[in-house]
Amino acid sequence: GNSVTQMEGPVTLSEEAFLTINCTYTATGYPSLFWYVQYPGEGLQLLLKATKADDKGSNKGFEATYRKETTSFHLEKGSVQVSDSAVYFCALRPYNNNDMRFGAGTRLTVKP
Amino acid sequence: DSGVTQTPKHLITATGQRVTLRCSPRSGDLSVYWYQQSLDQGLQFLIQYYNGEERAKGNILERFSAQQFPDLHSELNLSSLELGDSALYFCASSALDRTTDTQYFGPGTRLTVL
Image (cartoon, rainbow over all chains, first blue to last red; front, side, top):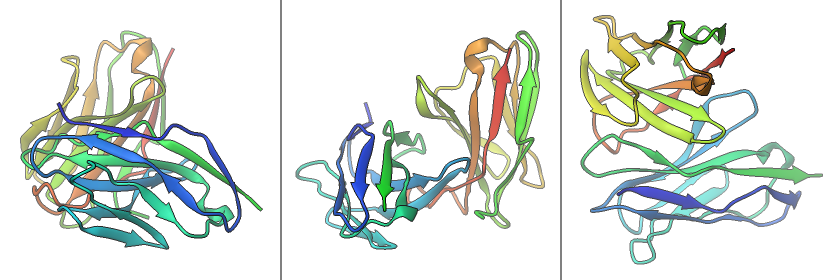
């Protein structure tokens, strides 16, 4: 079936460090892939998405590339800020239905 | 602010009771989705409605049901509540029904079953 596996947290980084959160998926066909961010006490916000192989999603300095050959969609940011502290969810939406699958979430804490 | 509103923000009730959660989608969005977020199960898709009709079902229990009204708001009904139903319930909306559509999430309703 369709599923997402993402790097377990928590992840703690210093400000301006490089961030990578790994995400791999299992799905038939070509799913759409998403990264969502959840700040404390809030709902999920879309961070970026990619809908076909080799697409790169980017937003607010975050990037992720849809890699069909490695079934991955790793999230990266070159220089994190304290304000990036949140929980990050990788998600996939199958090509043929709306049963969205989420990873377990990775909590990121950025220290000044 | 995503434009999706959910009420109430918090709900505390007892086992065996029934509750209704309400969601208003972003203006113009036709699809509404319901999700449950719990510590043990993570974030799970429950059900989707598109323009008043049920479109997709995920891990929704038979004790739970939903509907979408002509004004496009949606309600999630949870009955015969159990302790394990305590969770954050999110509603999301999207413009249409395409799998590439972005879903916009509401702030959630926190349900506590005592």
